[in-house]
Length: 359
Ligand SMILES: Nc1nc2c(ncn2[C@@H]2O[C@H](COP(=O)(O)OP(=O)(O)OP(=O)(O)O)[C@@H](O)[C@H]2O)c(=O)[nH]1
Image (cartoon, rainbow, N blue to C red; front, side):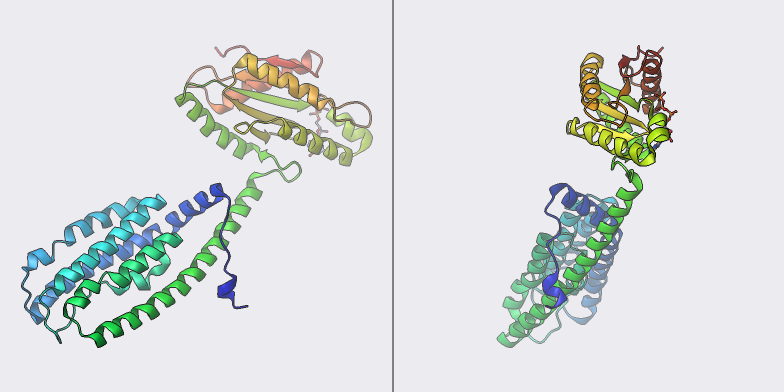
């Protein structure tokens, strides 16, 4: 089968689709802006140049009128990186060009040259269209936009030539866009995979410390804006060195995997969980105050008992801290949960200790 027919439908997962749309907008944004700028300048130059080759019943200022909105949408596209906005601006640019083309052909006599500045640009640069629908709308604009001008002053042969020409141009554009979109999607997928590998612990599949802290920091700031409580749990497996020393690292690894599975099974959708160190884990619990988090931690502690190591059930010591004031950093919150966990160790392990409020 030809590769064109094998080009797949990208991502059915809406989150991944959204992420891809933003990725495309970031990657293509500068090129879209550059093409819009060139098209706008080309339009201005072509209108001015046309005054030397033919008379128009419309004043040149009126024919130059699309330049102002063209410049506005082009300027807006310079920093736009939201996919929908970028598409809207690029499509507006095509529409304004089409209006300009039609304005400039008013009063054209048969046999006189057309002024078609930038008409081919959107077709030739079809790779810039971020989504399938942008592409379809852009191609429809390119194909149908000059029709009023054609029907006003062209003979049947000219219209036929134009239709054949546009059909070929749009087909070529569709092929170009399909392959380009496929290549970009593959690049996005690989980058995403590499990023995930760099952020995920290979043994347990949980977030690594830095990524956990990065996401927890963002969540903390959102929760503060929403005036919702948030707690951090710090969990440390008890007597883990003994497990490794007596039964080998493979037994230790198996216990860590089982522990991570249990923690993951206990998380709600918004909870964040990470492997902070060797046998240390952290959980951010959005929306829970200290007493609610203590109840969750107690459930977790008991759930971990179901994991058996060769010598005894696995146990964890858990420290809890609630974010107390707006200035507290995620590092400080984690450090307080860590201190509370140390108290749990000192108190005999396999227990939950809550941190007092920071000074
Ligand atoms: N098997 C395995 N062991 C690990 C891993 N990461 C850290 N460890 C071990 O975890 C153990 C942690 O030991 P300690 O910090 O002394 O703590 P502990 O023995 O659990 O004692 P308490 O925390 O005081 O109950 C060390 O022996 C590390 O080698 C890992 O990925 N796999």
